[in-house]
Image 1 (cartoon, helix red, strand yellow):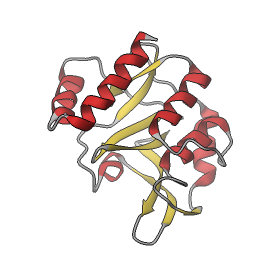
Image 2: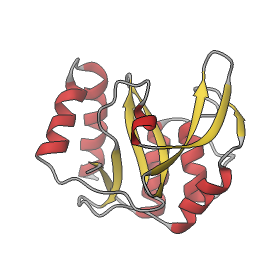
Image 3: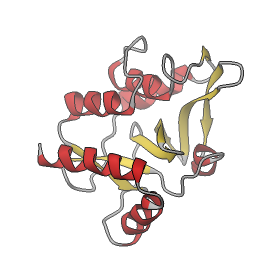
Image 4: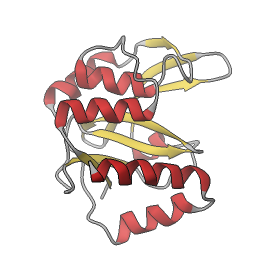
Length: 170
């Protein structure tokens, strides 16, 4: 429970303190243990005060729901590290890891669900049909879920894998 408090506290600081994300990223990349994702790992990066999430499927490939706010169109696509953070202020991609360690969470079932969704078109909406809902669907198999906020996705991760933390992708 204490780690959840610190994760949530950290999220608040990231939102309200200018430059906090950059400092946090430096600490995460050079001081804390890092992690390498495995197929089915859950990933996130900061996105101008919000978060972007996706699923690692191996060989440097990430499946994400990429949406466009201008016309509410979205597509589930394969990208790489550079593409995942493209157009964001992110410099670090984080990997969900078990407990307070650096052992990545991952599942072949989660990776397979992500692969099967590649190429699907979505009616993207920032709050009603977004990347967190897609990522949660890959975890649970229920793509018609209500995990439209990052905190909802984190709760789904906890329900399915127990306590976890985020580590910078090494």
